[in-house]
Length: 265
Image (cartoon, rainbow, N blue to C red; front, side, top):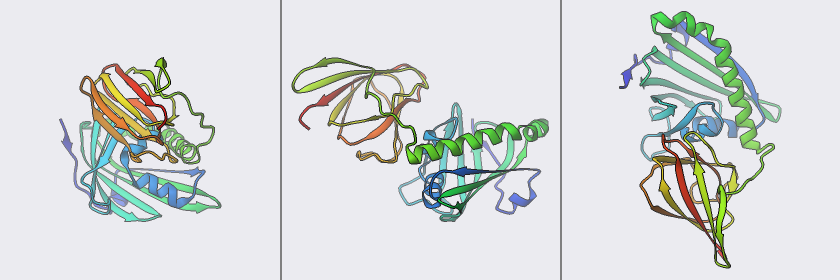
């Protein structure tokens, strides 16, 4: 069940009962850092701890007033963008949550240049439920650790630092001069290796309930953004070569798939 939060405005940043502020460095240029923070919410799953999937409503380019949604585990959030001043400031308000721990919340993100890198300033303004107000304030250290890890992850993801590409599946189960067949199995929450599709391929989804693909910044595939889908037994999906991505089982059931690589493509 979704709980509606109080529809506060930007003034709440200075009025909130609890205000937490954090700053961290990111090893990437400010324009790119801002683009990734304010962009596709689903791609937060590549770098922000706990984010499972997300997206903006509609097909229009996001801007002030746009609504987005995010899932972290079993908790879902709906948010509205309140400020968008690229590439320096992006702010959103939490409108609905399946967690009833807060009555109002705004997150304010600011990005500035720091030589060839970026400094990211993150402010959380929140009115927590009365019985957890003290606990929320005391969690500042834990929240700060999560933020610093997220910024480290973001920098590593954008620069592809220490990235190692792995196989596209769990194991090869058949190969001849025309095709190579892989088996892919992922437990709930499990991720595949980061991999590159060097050949056109056909995905045959055997079982599972929901799967996602997180593209890398240098992907050349036909799906440059985060993509997630419900699974139906023996779904068949053709995919062009060029994608660099990670498959993630974001469902509750074991995911099983056969990947057919088409040699000569």
